[in-house]
Amino acid sequence: MTNKTKYILPAFFILIWVGIGLTACLPKQKPADQQEETSSRIQPEWLKDAVLYEVNIRQYTPEGTFDAFAEHLPRLKELGVDILWIMPIHPISEEKRKGSLGSYYAVQDYTGINPEFGTLDDFKELVNQAHDLGFKVIIDWVANHTGWDNPWIYDHPEWFTTDSTGAIISPDPDWTDIADLNFDVPQMRRAMIDAMDYWLTETNIDGFRCDVAWGVPNDFWEEARTSFDSIKPVYMLAEDEDHPELLEMAFESNYAWELHHIMNDVAKGEKTAADIRNYFEKIGGKYAEGSFPMQFITNHDENSWAGTVSERMGDAADAFAVFSFTVPGIPLIYSGQEAGLDKRLAFFEKDEIDWSEMKKEDLYKNLIALKTNNPALWNGEFGEDVRFLNNGHPDQLLAYVREKNDNAVLVIMNLSSQPVVDSVEFDVQHDFAAWKGKEKLIGGEKVNIELQPWEYKIYTRK
Image 1: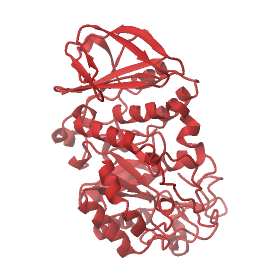
Image 2 (image 1 turned 90 degrees about the vertical axis):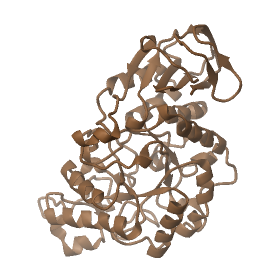
Image 3 (image 1 turned 60 degrees about the vertical axis):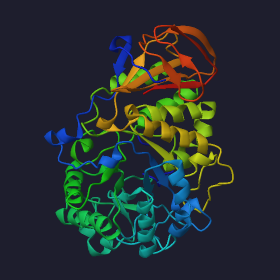
Image 4 (image 1 turned 135 degrees about the vertical axis):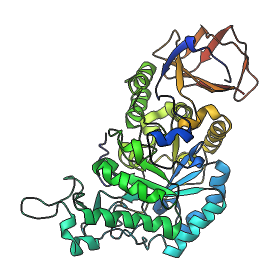
């Protein structure tokens, strides 16, 4: 949810014997051709090594339009991202609006286009250009609620949640600019699915990121997914973490919020690398076959309400960017993240991203290439689990490997503000090489580790 005043929701190539460390985290996924045993959804093959990029049209350019954003598509293609998640494109309600421009998530018309961004033809052209360059496009969808001047309020007030007096209510006391929809009403459900189908058929988008997915019954999402799959294969991302049933048939991905918050706490010195390892041990069987989390160090909510990457993570930011790309899950880059965005973007007003210095572009370009070129890091059943390696500094050092067939990636990072100088013996049976540079590590020997605060090393073996 995005219109609250506070965000309240909840490196080496190697072959390593299983006995060297503790296997943790996401369970081994079944091959795609076995998905039908437990799920009726059709999972697109293009998800296998995909990286998400969240597009804030309003703040992306001075013009804040689809046409202006389209000029960035070649740059994003070169960066290497695969799926463009475009924040809500619908007209924003004026009644009870917050700020002068309002929240993107107070939808006035489910089949309309925000005139600030352009026209329906402009959006279709953007999707066509993106597809021509090899991108997939998903849009933000707000099924949980509408704005207060959405036609449904006037035409079908019975579709909304009411209080004891019969008055339509907001889903939360702080979300005063929206009205809560009642999913006990079959006619409303059908109208909602029809509206979502419209965007798939009319504009040829490739899926949805669903706002407040946790506030909508799972059986609605499953019904909707069946309808989508009858049109085309789609990718579905749920704004949710605590309802794993959403991942059984309706969604491929949810948010790894708890892990995100642990990262913030480690960066502040309030938690340690051991807490990250403990997290993966705890979630062992959480993810349904064919599903995987979205990993992130920022997004529109975190940036505007919780703080910038530098505010929350400081010197640890790059290490956690590496972490988000090398643990299981689909990584997210938010608008401006590759430029080193270091301000909280206003949510209800115009507040442009500064593209004058692309401070982090090389970092993310390299991380995307690392993920793409190493099948062990791919998403869901296409990739492999993570195995954590024991070491003598469990509160500082995080060492983990992901390996699939002959491919392997090993990451060692110092997640503390103190240097680590030590000799650690990993049971490696093969030589491996640094992902960047000429460093070689010889199998069977002790590894001399010298890592400065928040420094990391990545090794690969093909």
